[in-house]
Length: 306
Image 1 (cartoon, rainbow, N blue to C red):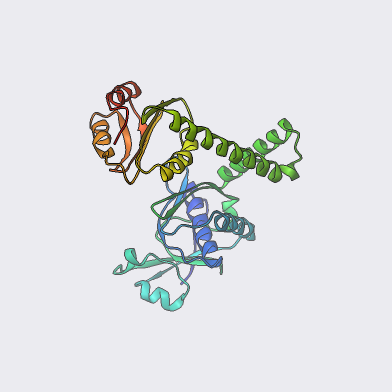
Image 2: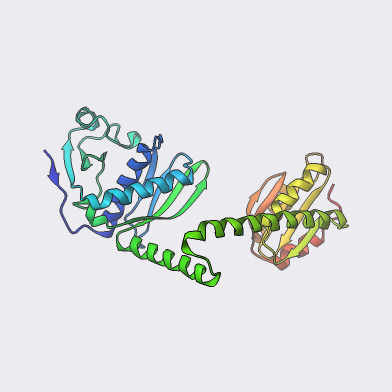
């Protein structure tokens, strides 16, 4: 028997109901997604969705638009109890559920959002989609083949969207750009940055070529801008090993024909808590904790690492 969810839901319930709609929207876009975890009842009011697959950004933002189109339709949110997931699946063949969690579970609660979504869930929900008000993706990150989506809902989403809109208008005023032309403006800016990065790569390759040391101190620079330059240089110089130290980051790469073992120096820096990051025989990459001590260690290395 279907019963309507109580009204006056919490912020967590607003986030969780919007997550249900968002996940279903992604599926409706033809994606075979598997939600590992939804974290929506946090003290900071943030929502996080952890998806086992890597989802393209365009698909995520298309699903975001679908959620906001559905919210004002005021779909009722109802729940129904079943003995197990098999009984629930017999009635709702399109039910979403985490098989690993519910495989042997007795007593299943199903949450139904109009005719749009039906999902096995034990968490609190809104009574109607209109209570969600708005939904906004705040950040997307990819790690280990998974997609993590940070999002807001309710008035938090409204405030975020207003602030974002205000920021765009500020940019338009500052650079004398019409709001309708902001996409082209951003594209032009991105093209300029890419050209600048290409010039930096060439400059950096020249810096390495002219250096009489394989350990190079680059000061307070944006290290990621140099990565491509290092990789390009190493492809043509497989006998080299290059270590770069900036104020904030340590990055090193060993050519395939070089015998210097980067793990030895990396492990030493990790053990002495001067550095935090990835350490292998072939590369180092991470955050500098104690710049002066790391610099002293690197200065003690031979001029050429072979």
